[in-house]
Image (cartoon, rainbow, N blue to C red; front, side, top):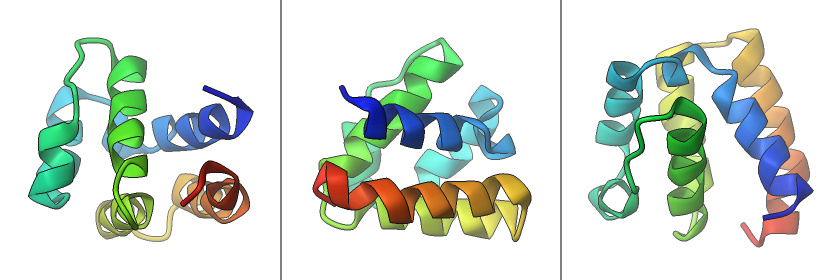
Amino acid sequence: MDAPFFRLADALDALPCMADPSSREIVIGQLPSAIAGAIHRHNQRRMEVMEILRACLDYRDGVRQLLAVAQGLEGDSLPLRRLSAVVAEVLPQLGG
């Protein structure tokens, strides 16, 4: 993985909805079933956040769908605005 991936993972990991397993479960449950089914679950938060991101990157518009779910849960929070900015900056570098 390269720097753009980890920048995106850092921004995603900073969201309150990624803080605990039950909230990540809600995020995953809101994603399309193909993406949700491709996520390898992990006991460690950072690893699971990276798996969520990897799965979303494997699907067309997957990161945008993840961003939409996060927006629905987080509203207009500062961490969400940071994630949106990082997505806009690095997604083209990741082929999204």
